[in-house]
Image 1 (cartoon, helix red, strand yellow):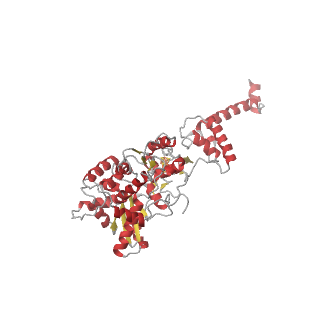
Image 2: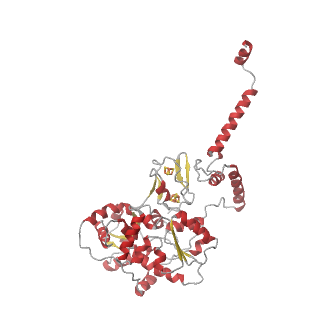
Image 3: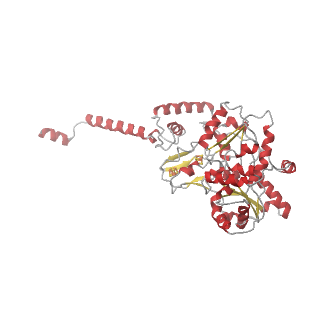
Length: 443
Ligand code: SF4
Ligand code: SF4
C-alpha cells in the first residue's frame, strides 16, 4: 500500500482547468498546470470540498462498486447513520435494514450502534485528568488528517478510541461467526458511506495497521435500489438496535450530546473548523472539555456522497430519533467490547507536515528565505490565475522547482513589456539597412 491512498481523484478528461477548486481546498493541495488540475498527494485530506465545487464534475470519489460483494461468501452491510436520513416518509430504520438485505447483504449492523458503544468508551477518557483538554473527536477522518497535516501540535488531544464504523465491523463479524460458524476471513464488511474520507480511512487507516472493514459503498450507489424496495409494503421485523443518541452522530453536535457533557463545542464545515483548531493550538480553549469538528456542513448528513439535502436529512434523523429509546449499552456489552475487540488506536498518530521545504535544516532555511523573497516580488493579489491558490504558494512551488515566476500573469506581462521596450531600443540602435538608406536618399 502506498503511503498516500486517496479516494478523491481527478477525471483529467473532464477538467477544464478553470481553477475553481484551488481556492476551496483547505490544505492547498491543488494546482492547475497545463490547463489541468493536479492533486498533491501528501497534502490532500480527502475532505471532498473539491468534489462539491467543481462545475465540470471532474473531481470524483472512488468507492467500491456493489459488485465487490461477489468477492465474499458472506457480506455485512454497515450503514452510516446518515443513510436513514435519505428517505422521504421513512417511519422506522428497520425498513432500510431489510432493503439492504434485499440488495445482497446477508447481515446488517448499524454503525449507529457502534456509535452508542464508542460514546461510552470516550466518556471514560473524559474523566482522565492528565489528558490534554479539550479532547478532540477523531470521528471525522478528514479532520483527523487535517490535524496531521496542519495542526500536528494537537495530535495529543485526539481521542484514541476506534471509530463507530470499526467497532461495528468487529462486532458484526464476531456475531455472524458465532451464529453460523463462518470463518471471519470469508466475511466481508462494507460501510455504506456518505463521504470519501471514510473510504480512505479503510484503505489507509490512521492509528492502526489495518481496518476491520473490507470496503465502502457510496450512499449514492444504494439510494436508488433502496428507494425502490421501500415502496414495496412488507412486515419488516424489528432489527434496529441503535439508540437515538447513536443515530444522532450523523449530525453536528450528535457526539457531544451523546456524551451528555455541558462543556463541549461542535463545529461543522472544514473552513469553520480550521479557525477553531487554530484557537485550540494557541491555548485559547483550554477550558473546553471536548471539541467535535466535522468537515462537512451539518455533519455527515452533508457528505459529498449523499443524495438528500443535508438539512432535510438532518430533520429526518431528528424525527426518526424521536421514535427511538435512549438506553445506553449495558455493562456486559461494554465489558465484551473492552475484552475482545480492538477498541483503542494501537499506533501513534504521526504528524505529516507539508510545509517542510527540505530534509536538511540549513537548506530548508535557505529555501524559506528564497520563498519569502519571491513572495515579496509577486503582486500579492492571490488571484489564482497562475494555477496556485495564492502568491505565497506560487512562491513555494517555484522554490520546490514545480513552477516558474512566469506562471504569474502579472510577472509575465511585466516581462513582455520589458522585452518589447528592449526591442524598440535595440531597433533604434541598429545601423540603417539598404531599404532605409534608399528611402532617406529619395526624401
Ligand atoms: S474546478 Fe478544478 S477540477 Fe474542476 S474543472 Fe476547474 S480546475 Fe478542473
Ligand atoms: S479532497 Fe479536499 S484536501 Fe483533497 S484536493 Fe480536494 S479539497 Fe483538497
